[in-house]
Length: 460
Image (spheres, rainbow, N blue to C red):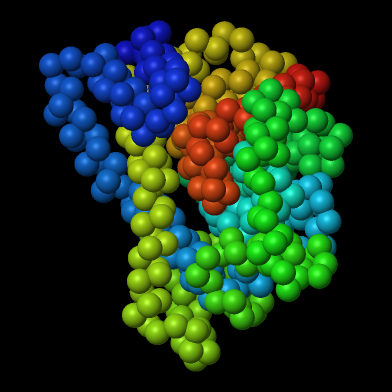
């Protein structure tokens, strides 16, 4: 690793600018990684890129991510084909009478599916996008609501993948004794200000208290123009507006079984959550177990042959390739940033300001910048704990408050970063362009982040 310097800030700046200008996140990330490798060693750019990319592809986390994301895509494809998702859509329409109620249902569904941000982002977006379309809600607004109930909700619930991962890190770094990682994590939950404020802000947006602002306002206006209703004349057998809305939802599911049953949607989702909890919050094992029950369940109903199921699952897996590619590129970029000492430079530059009074706020700002720049919310936490926590002890800072600041920064990065896994999957599940989603939700994430900074200063 190079000696940390201000040059380490150049690759993240290049990525953010190119992502906004080109709207090609994978290309932007790879160019940013190459810029970082030139800084590290101009003569070994090709060799270092090859070794870094191979290291990323052999990483267990990446293998897990590919299988989980692809598996979700496969399951969603089955839910759509059997007509189960369509049946849920028709049921949801009975309780959604307008834009606000459709968004509120999305919010509530996001809160209920709190086990994992991947599960949340893909399931809620895919489930609700055809409902919100009927009320001319922009896909950008839907993706924002989904993203705001993914990582921010998961980080606040001690029974989630986030709690398990971070609780383990607290034990590994000596912050908590063996078996007490989750207990220490729970002590920090009241101080996870960004997550609390992010959920509050999105709820106020859903209820119409906070209006659409900036790029989101433009997206909402475009949705009213572009999402024109289907001509009612083609549905001459329909007598009521509710029946027309149900028929319109059916049209959106293309080749879905028109006689789809609600239990064919609810059972796999309930199984997925239940198995994930049963396997100690392991989403991949939960997904495998759910598939093992769902496939025979569909076969017994003769909804489709096993060969068609496999074909549909492969199509669903393929639909996730753009999202998987973006996350892999983000991991490569993150490794390059580590190589040129970006985390050490940012933390070292701000360490003079880390007094007991300002430490939580400075930690939140520094880690939020790093998580936003690298797209690595979990990785940044793992890197920063050994640096930040001894400093917090030395200045006699409030330890749960500092942990809350670190986790707030992680959830901010997960939601706000243009190429973080959560942002990518929220856009994918909602059927929204990734950069459009990232740009439109950014003002709201910055509002919540500003409120969090004030909270950390006041509480310290």
